[in-house]
Length: 489
Image (cartoon, rainbow, N blue to C red; front, top):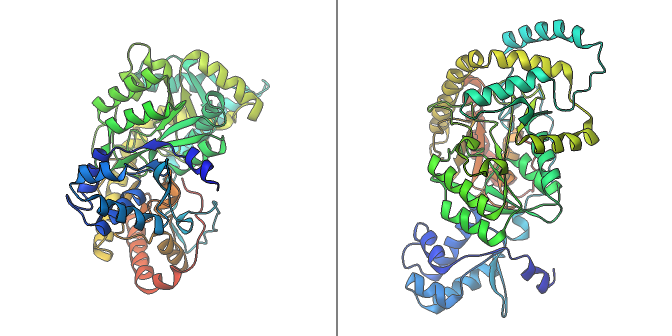
């Protein structure tokens, strides 16, 4: 890549005081040059500094850290030698990742009967309720069979049921504000395709849901990442990113964030709404996990906090995939009625309409949603605790925050080995995805695994045992071979 092209790809600037604050937790208050370089590498691999960020001038950073300029110069030299930074006279120094750190394209691995699949954070279907819903749907289907069967907006009864649930959760909603889609991924893709154009920026969390990130990249949009850590979101950083990059859209998962499990506090939600109003940024809120509340009350809909016309900039997507079953491809968009009409017009050009049978099944499942959740949430809570206990027994050096909701643990392995471990684990009958798959910047989060707790407790125990075996026996050899990540949910 030519030097001028590299400079044009620099997206953000990081101030000396901001970097000094970040480094204080990793490199110490007055680091030597090796500790300083290691601190920047750690922050970069952990997603707290994004790729293509211009680092502070050497003199400015030296002053903020209270070290000599020579110390900073030597640290930047180490970063450049390792492929973690690049410089150009007159343009400064910006962050990169070595080519070997970048994950390659997505590939699916077949899972046999003896393979424990931890790549998919999705529960099995509630069988009794599903069977009852199928019987009820069959009866209604005969009534609709005399019609052409195309309902681009979704069948009216299901639109009304989704709207009524939003209203009960605290966000008054009319059926004409609802579009039924083939899952939340379909909803996100439709929205990106309508509101964005190739080259536009999208503010995203880092890490984030991989398929959402893929949809953004597939639409030719550019990501502007903001980190989500164990402490949650940094509102100041979000606001500065909005000001610096002026993104057309933002894609956020504020409820039991995938993969970290974090929940955005109400005050931060209000600040985000105010910030996107000022920048004119469309806000796509993914509420797929909002009902998976294990140790806390389910959050109210994000858009319920909107004021002064802010609600018109909020597009909410959701689905039945996490509450019920991913095999039932039912999702929705909640937005202003005019935008719903425009989304539907776009939808017709892509898939005409959704399955009427699936929508009838979903209609009856939604009637009993509270019953399903009352049975499902205690089981998920027990499986979460069982997985945490199994990991503590078999892999005591690993660390994680126990999430108050969601479907997975975001595990810190202590060293960057996730891709190699995932390759070794497959040989021991565990399919799992390394943390790099969740990074907005390719190659980050190599020290992380997302481990779902959607399987029975005894399966979680066996999975932890197999992971420990893979780590202790096969990791050194497997670390030498590259691996392609597979799709996740």
